Length: 152
Ligand SMILES: [Ca+2]
Ligand SMILES: [Ca+2]
Image 1 (cartoon, rainbow, N blue to C red):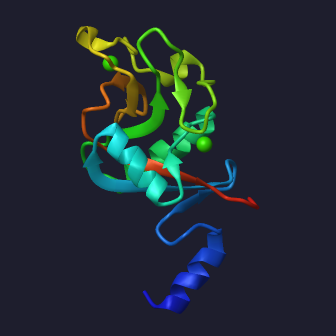
Image 2 (cartoon, rainbow, N blue to C red):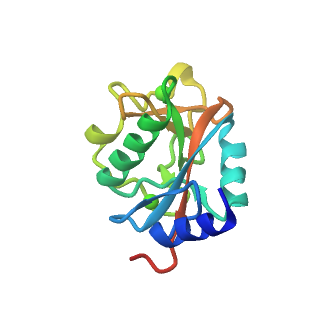
């Protein structure tokens, strides 16, 4: 792609080349197709002036899941920017907000389960669009979110 074509792509949706725009959230998203631990994924997003994705609404969850689902042919699990300090503290998104989506529309059946009494203090979305608590030392694809300064 030429430099001029890249510029027109940015103007078309206000997101950098390779990022997708959601008009309802006013953010840009990018699926990173390397499998990383949670902390590595978080750092990579920050290097792109973005954050591990914060799913503030059910609509945003569905938008991001649909995007990832179209991009990946198999193993559609991906990190989201959700974490808690320990198993008794509240879940928090990387943008500092708390988890607002209704539990029944968010967590997979039987989750969060802190499986095997391990420290499952991070979360990924499964291929059925539901969320599982999991240890941040696992590796997974991940989605970064970039908030536009002046969303249109
Ligand atoms: Ca968000
Ligand atoms: Ca779990």
